[in-house]
Length: 141
Image (cartoon, rainbow, N blue to C red; front, side):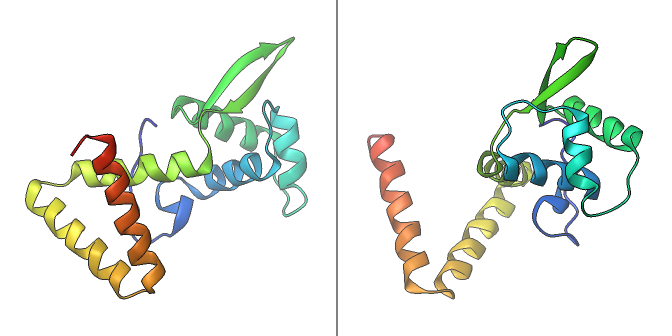
């Protein structure tokens, strides 16, 4: 994911992607396409709003430049495929934010995560404990 930025005022995909980029990725992931064309995405988006082919083409190309999509030639057109699932994207975005913090910021982020999970329900806290235990086993600790 090249060019990832964080817009803290936005939620979900829109925190790291522009709105149309997020809309396109949501369509791609929801449809479960292995390979798709700009026309495929356009057809789905036009069910919700009026949008030009060239706008979708430019945005899909930008997603390719950001390494969100792969592409290959199919005759005279390109077809595209997602490079990662939604879950992989979210994990990578979270990792990039965490890695960008100085060490004091990382400590604060971990404390915030524990506080946030603890203020939720007990199941979330148990899930966090399970994930930590699994990671410790993977690392041989």
